[in-house]
Length: 394
Image 1 (cartoon, helix red, strand yellow):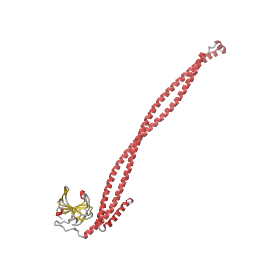
Image 2 (tube, rainbow, N blue to C red):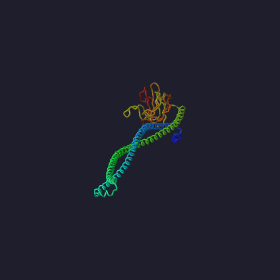
Image 3 (cartoon, rainbow, N blue to C red):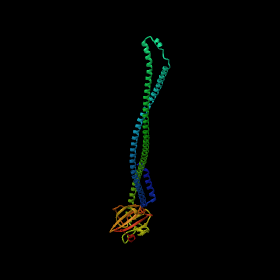
Image 4 (cartoon, one colour):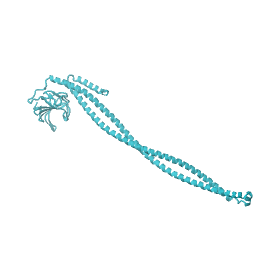
């Protein structure tokens, strides 16, 4: 209720301002109150229409948010899967890099060993060919037994064979190390290409996820704005309804006062005509019955100020009391015998459908609602539904 106080206060101020302006003119005061009610009802209708549009839009935005969130979730799942693949491939590439470094180090060591072994072999071969042939007698003289002589010759031979074997083994190991390193290098190149491809796909998936996230966030922002607008529209409508309730109570009180005055005063505004009708209001006829502006004018227009009491031309039953297109607020009364009268462009209605009215009873307050260029009463007389010239019955 606290949020409705400003509107209720404005209603109280409106009623307070109306009363002094109208003084004892109860009819005029009711006209002002009913005009305000009519304005508020229009505002309520506009608020309800706006709330309906916002509700529909909010439903569409909520569905769009759900779709956007689903797209974001799917994009995130794709990104997570690619990120997992990328991490696995990067770990594999790191292992291959470590293996390649180890194999490169081993190959360099074997290459150094091979060069040293080959150098030693070359030095010994060169020394054997460059040394003089030993004197057999000196060899025989230098040994103490035949077995020692054989051992010396075998030792020299074994030294040569051992150097050759070492060179061959080192060369073979070097070749195997080079082949292993080349194979690891090729595997690393393939792994690096795989990492690059997955990395590119991961970047693209991240961009898609980010774009979808931005779209989702925009929709969420729009959803929040529309929710706030809907809440404001509903709050405004509630405020208008509270003000209308207060004004309707005031209007009902004024109706009671008007009806009390009517019961105490003369009901008519003029003496009945030969046809038994009285004028609904006293004022000049500004437009007669017949063709006007290329179309049929089905009644007469009587110029009077807004809020002028409109009287029933004869006793009868109210068959229509409400809004009707170009007529604005309209009252139609059936007098029996096929005779009916209508009173249009009112600012306020004081009777309801089915109500019995006496001749001269105030049924409405004049105005300028519907298709009207100024305040007046459009008065019609119809016989069996066919419009006739009212002046022939007044």
